[in-house]
Length: 177
Image (cartoon, rainbow, N blue to C red; front, side):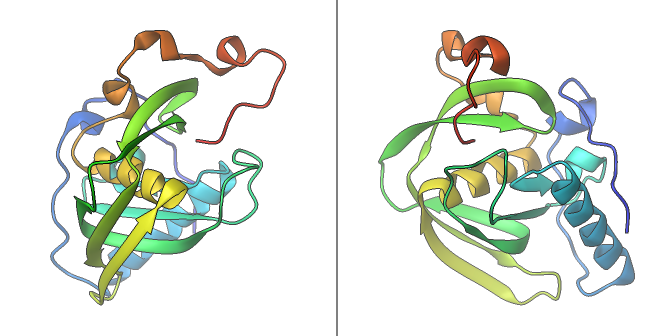
């Protein structure tokens, strides 16, 4: 459909809790999802939340095959996740470098649960229930944070591990997000 402009950190919508989706399988939802996928792919993202393109709905898309922004990352199946709920499967946290289309040019070291369960619905209202770990779990947590008005810099525990990519990683490819 269309590549949409991505809101940047500082925009008030990015700090709000998004609204629940109440109707599935609609033309409006299909158009939103098509735009989200087009935008994510055009910007080589691993995921995108509806608020990032100015739509306050609890909708995320994510997925990763081969991607120049994440050369070492494991594959993550393309998923539409609506009205998600996340539950940690244990207390193990793992630090990982993250970036964000709404915080361009920057990276931060963020602790996330290593293993999670996520539930929600797809675009037709069909239930989704998955246990995942590693990069897949990190991407889901990052994208779902957007639905609650949380951007990854708000989760960085030591600001010495947050900065511009070319300063943190001079002359090298940045680590996977």
